Picture (cartoon, helix red, strand yellow):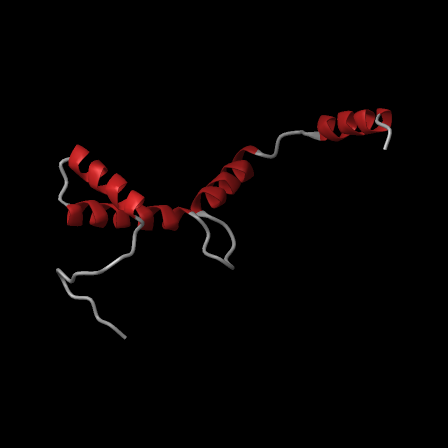
Length: 93
């Protein structure tokens, strides 16, 4: 198992187009290439922390929404079913 130490170099494979786009973005933001990729990795880790891991239950956002709904209650959506049923009855299947 490899052990990465501070300052370790890592290689990734990118298409020429992706490399060129990343180079332009790094220059546009006055970042060195290594800083650009390190920042991209930090942002991606943050993103991954907000989505559920494969095989797990809910993301942090979904859990928070569920908590809020418990506090304020579920909205009454019975009208949706009633109106949907009325529309379905008029449609020829």
